[in-house]
Length: 303
Image (cartoon, rainbow, N blue to C red; front, top):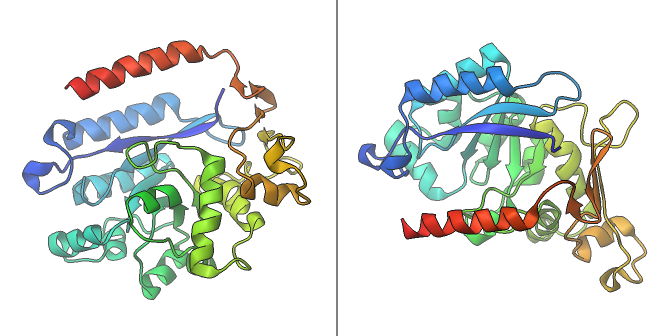
């Protein structure tokens, strides 16, 4: 019942060739591109109200060749899907791009045909003023991932400069390798606090951060039918109860949602249908899912 944009990730540059991924995770370019086209053809829905969409997501400059980046950009243009990668997360990544490609990260992005409004980037921390201007002019989106960035001590995304330049800002959780909670409402709280360290409390308000989490994130995905409550928009709602002791006495429910640490929606509606009721996903065997997950994790750790 979820509405999702799923990404076909790819890694083609393994340790043996100077990349970051273990060699067993690397795929040949032909396999990546053929499977990407298959997934788009089978699962990608179009138009307002689309439930499942597919984007192409070569992992990072550490992980894929420029050829895969260029081929993915060409396929995305031809099949009209979006592009996603991780960029400017760490200074090591910047050094890698300079040493391997002779380019800074945004120059590299431009050289492979990704500097466009079809693209959204995870992290977006280490940009200079000129790069921020270019990203804004292109309309390239930035997904701020505060918990991951704090866990890895990567830095702080310059959200306000990017936003002022014209780059859409959304929020994300990165992934389980660097964010075990993957809780979007708590991520908004983290964004509020982390961005206040950079810009101060007056500029970073709960309203602004919730705007990134909703309208901004919808813009990253190229969806003009999601992200706000308005006539003609999709009926996607998350409802939170503010009747626990921690919320008692709060005079501003919007601020309380973040400042008091709401951590689970009571109800979630997707496309006009309730998919979460009383904090539980309808029709999901949670106990069975946890058992299967524990077994899979044990096998992974055992090697």
